[in-house]
Image 1: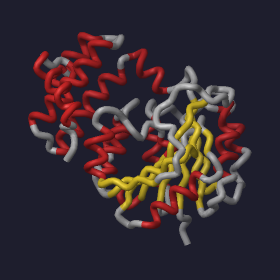
Image 2 (image 1 turned 90 degrees about the vertical axis):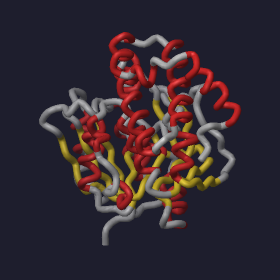
Image 3 (image 1 turned 90 degrees about the horizontal axis):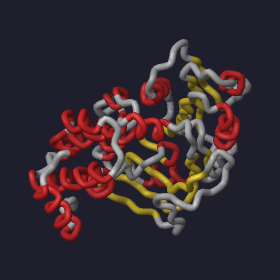
Length: 304
């Protein structure tokens, strides 16, 4: 019988955090899973750490790349091709899981066959596991919120990537097999477009319990994307893809253009002129587009 969950750890140069990450998975209260360990040609001591787990009964694969792929999402896709479970958890190699995370999310997925994603809340931690004072949704109310996937994308995923850390979520493999898999063409925002496409295949469950620790450090791809401007380039592509998938009206497209034009103008953006040439229809809106955005916030233009 295949395992219920396939847990994929796509690692690159996270040796200092890797053992803690793997142990937090092996210690899960819910034990019906396989563990797939992938390394994208790390230059640190990651190989030595991963080889310690080669013969563990929960580990089904340990694969070392001969060359670096340049994108974590290529590793995601490789892991998904190996996955035998009904559900998949991409457990980022520098994060840490509460022992109850997997069980809590699987239980919610099992309640309804139309659910394609279940995710928990996260705390932010630094390289030494200290809890950071800032964060996003860290509510620990115990509530379980079920939302139609299209409504969730409209209200939560167009103005930001609400599922901002892969480690906080599990998803149904059968739904993944139905989506356009070009998310692996991205270097930074592949997760955002992946979640958007996946959410549109069914319902989304938000478990309002803090069961995931999302590590913040200088080596993160997120930090690198901000320095290079790659985040903005890929954000433009994600928004265009989402607008087309949702068949957004002109009013809603102008709302989005106004929001991102205003944000683009306020932030420090490397290669600003080149990005504007590429995505002028997203970041180069008019004062009227910004007006649509300000009005739309009051009237909630993004509701279905």
